[in-house]
Length: 148
Ligand code: THU
Image (cartoon, rainbow, N blue to C red):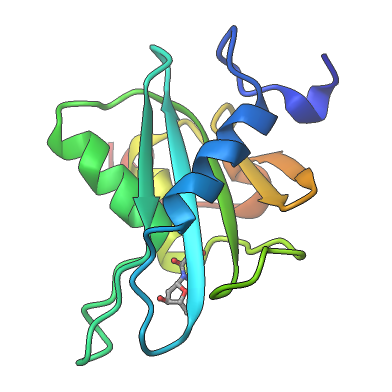
C-alpha cells in the first residue's frame, strides 16, 4: 500500500476513511454557508466516528465537521486517535478540491493527538489528495505537553 493511503491502523486505509467522510458530509446542516463538510475520525483501536458541520442562525455556535467527530468520540470515552479524513465543498456538489481544517479544529486535534503521529487525510470525490501529520499542518503547536 502506498504511503499516502496509510492511516496508521492496520486494515483501514485512507481511501476507506475518505469514503466515510463523504458519507458523513451528506448530513451536513449548512443553511447559511452552503458549504458542506464531512469528517471521519479513526481511533487507534480501529473505530470510526463520523462528523459533519452544523451551522446556526446566530453563526458563532457553528460546529465544524472535525470538531463534531472529536466531540462525539471524546464524549463516548475515546482518547486515542490515529487519523482523520476531511472532505468539503459547495452543498449539493461533489467535492473537487481539498478542504483543509480551520485553525480551531487543528487546535482541538492538538489537544488529543500526538502531532508527530496523527495523520490528517484530505480527500475529494477522486480520492486521497493529502496525507500529512498534524505537526506538518500545525507547526510549533501549543498543546498539553507545553503546559506539562
Ligand atoms: N467548516 C468545517 O466544518 N470544517 C473545516 O475544515 C472548514 C470549515 C465549516 C464551518 C462552516 O459551517 C462552513 O464550513 C463554512 O465555513
